[in-house]
Each structure stands twice: as structure tokens, then as C-alpha cells.
Amino acid sequence: MKKTSSIWLYCLAVTSLTLQSCSRNPVTGKKELIFMSQEQEIALGAQSHPSVVATMGLYDDTKLQNFINEKGKAMAAISHRPDLPYQFYIVDSPVVNAFAIPGGYVYFTRGIMAHFNNSAEFTGVLGHEIGHITARHSARQQTTQVLGTVGLMAGMVLSDKVRQMGDQAMQGLQMVLLSYSRAHESESDKIGVGYSGKIGYDAREMAQFFGTLKRLSEKSGQSIPTFMSTHPDPGNRQTNVNQMAQEYQKANPGNYLVERDSYLRMIDGIIYGDDPKQGFVENWNFYHPELKFQFPIPRDWQYENSPIQFQMAAKDGKSMMMLTVAEGKTLEEAAQSVVKNYNFKVLENKNTTINGIPALAMVSQIQPEQQQGTQATTTQTPAQDPKTVVQVGTWLLQYNGIILAIHGMAYTPAFNDSFGTFRGVAEGFKSLNDPDKLNRKPDRIRIKTVTRTASFKDTMKNLGMPDSRIDELGILNQMQPTDPVTQGTLIKVISK
Ligand SMILES: [Zn+2]
Image (cartoon, rainbow, N blue to C red; front, side):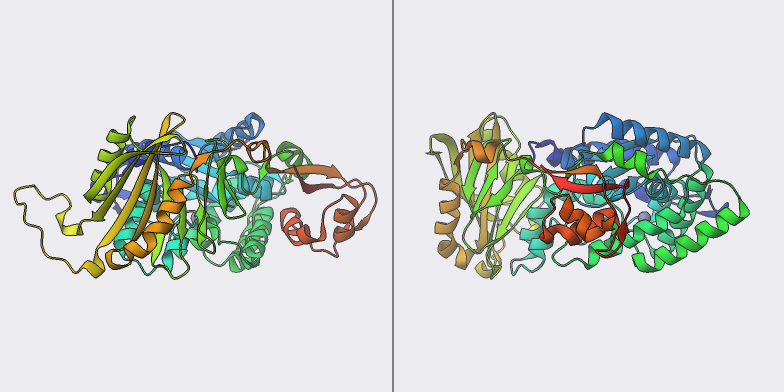
């Protein structure tokens, strides 16, 4: 969870995209139905970009930023649409992903940057993403889930209404992260091969990176990166891209760059995996060192942290909780916006304090969907089966200059049974003072020079890496445990 409330403000009007026109596709040269003009594409990108930034945050690294700008601009110039106002960003997410939004916005996560092993892999993926933009694939975009945020909710017994509530914060972003068809993915792979070749890089390395994606997806317990879940099987793509790259180089002979060492030196020190600054769980407590608070997690509940919210759910799926940042400067303002955003009917509310923190507690019911947006011309509420009405306990806390909202939800008949649990979490909210938690450091990728030739596994041991991380390090380095690593090779390790 990050200190951002602005995400609530961004919502894209999908309906405005339905304006249709017929134009020539810049890549294929064919006439086709395009759902937006170039001006609309640019406007959509400009409108969506702040929600990407608000949700994920930008990763602050001047060296990396300069690198992606330089390669991005070089590639934009040789692309089919050099006139777009391209922009390139690294977002602060551990997930291995890259994505583009219309109008020329291209994003790489720090997670994918940590997994590349050379500049050629990067430029291949860059070409693929720019390809989605230049071939105007966004015209037929479909929304998709991102960051696995709703993964926890997927198995919930609770209704879609509750799921929507959890998802609301993500909606702005869901609009812009697209699920492309297989045909579009293949087309973008082909474009990526051509673009990276044109700026001098060896596109066979891009094929290599699909091997990394495949291994990541096979690793147990690993949530499937969006880059993969929305993309065709990486195994096939590895073969296809490799073949296309070889054909490209046969037709355009030359010395194609890989740039392994300079790329690795550039990512030396990049944050790897979760950043504890964004909150972490330990011994059934959630700690947020940056916002300096903690609260207990009900024992044996499932939980999921994302940059904009923290969700928890009972294993039986019958009750769930979430913590987010609420809109508003005062508890009263926040209460008003929460009631409006979620269409709450407030049953009771009172001001209180929790461990010395000013708070407002409410119990509400989520009103039926059909009432949303209707004029208040009638006070008649249609009778509803209480079994399908979701009741919510909300605690708003004014803490460190922001308002945090804790919601506990269950169907009305089960609400009273769960209420004690909800209240236990809310009343366990307190300031975080433990220096051990406040100063928790993230893992980082460090680049080492191998001093004597050995197998990858032994090399990692020699460098002090535990056995438990050999698989993970093998994926990061694109190596197998028995692969020989020669003296002088640069290699990635993980340390604080
Ligand atoms: Zn793609």
C-alpha cells in the first residue's frame, strides 16, 4: 500500500472510445476500422498515465531512466509512427511485466528490469510494446485484471458487489492494461524483432527472455505475471521469435549487439521483490513502515497487499476486510466520500478514538446496484432478501495527515458473527514504532564477478547464496544449476 488517494479520482470513460472511423493501419498498410483517432489515443494516454503512476509509483533510478529513454527514442524514430509523443517509464512493481497504453506511453516494471540479462532482451520487449502502439492494437482493447489484486477475491463466496468494491480502486488501471488477442501478440513479436534489429540489437535475445517467463510461470507459488497471462504461451513464442530473428538477420546481415556486461552493471543495486516500504506481513501483523502503522490480521486468513490496498479474507470466503486510503481531509469528508463511492446506506455511525487516534466508526449496507445513479425522486426502497445484502463495518482513522479506511464485509445474516473479528482488527490499529520494522530493507540485485570457474550452483554457494534461493537465482541469471560459469563472468546475486 502506498500513500495515494488520487487513484479514486481516475476513471476512464470507455463509452467515449466507441467513436469509429476507418483509417489505414500504419504497420500493415491495410484499411481497417479504428475505434479512435490519433488525437483520442494521445488524450487517452495522457488521461490514463496518472492512474498508472498513482497505482504503481515510479521507480526512481536516473541511470535506468536515461537508458530506457535513449533506447525508446531511438526505436520510436525508426517505428511506423515516429510522430507520437512517446514516453518511457519504470514503475515500482516487483511483478515481471511491461505494458503500453495508447498515445505512446510505455512502461517497464523494476521486476522485469531485474530479470533481463542484457540490453538486447530489453529492446526486444520494448519493440514488442511499441508494436502494440504502432499497430494500433488498443483499438480493440479489452480490460483485464492487473497485479493479481483480485486473485484473493476470486474464490470468495461473497457477491460480485463486494468484489466490485474491492476492485473499484483498480478500475482506472484496468481500463488501460489491455488483454490482446493472440494474433496481436504474434504481430507485436514480429514488429519487436524488426524494431530491435533496426536499432542494432540481436532479437534472438528476446526469444531467450521468453524462456525466463516460462520458468517464472512454472515456479510454484508464483503468481502469473500479467505480461504472460495476457500473452500466448511463452514456449511457442520463444521458438517463433528466434526463427523470426534469424530470418531478419539473414536478410539484414550485420553485427547485432547484446550488451550483457553493461546492462548488468547498470542494474546493480536494483530493488528486487517486495519493498517493505510498501507494507509487509509478519506473525499475523501488517506493518507499514512508511505510513508508520500496524494492525493485526485474523489468524489463518488469506491476505494480499497491493500498492493501493491491503485485502484479507476468511478461508471460508464468508467475510473479508480491506484497508485503503480514503478521500477527504477530515473524518466527516472521508465518510461522505466512502458512502457515495460504495453506495452505502448508513445504519449507524459514531466518533471514537482507537489507541489515541481520532476515528469514525460506521455500519452500513451496500445498496442494490439498480439504485446507483437514479434520481432521488422516490424514497421507496425495493424489498431485498437480507441474505444477499452485504453489510459493512467501516473504521475511518485520521492518522499522520491522511485518512485510512478499514472495511469489514459479510452478508447481513453473518455480519454479527464476523463483527468481533472486524472490530479486533480496527481496534488493533496503532502507530508503528519498532525500529526493526521501520528500518526493514528490501532485497537488491548485486552484480558480482565470478573468481573461479564452477557450476552455477557452486558459484552461487561460493558467493554466499543459500540453497533455498538457487532456483530463483537460476531464473534471474537464465542459468541451470549444472551450467558452467567461467571465471570473469558477471553474475547476479541477491542481498540487502
Ligand atoms: Zn503484448
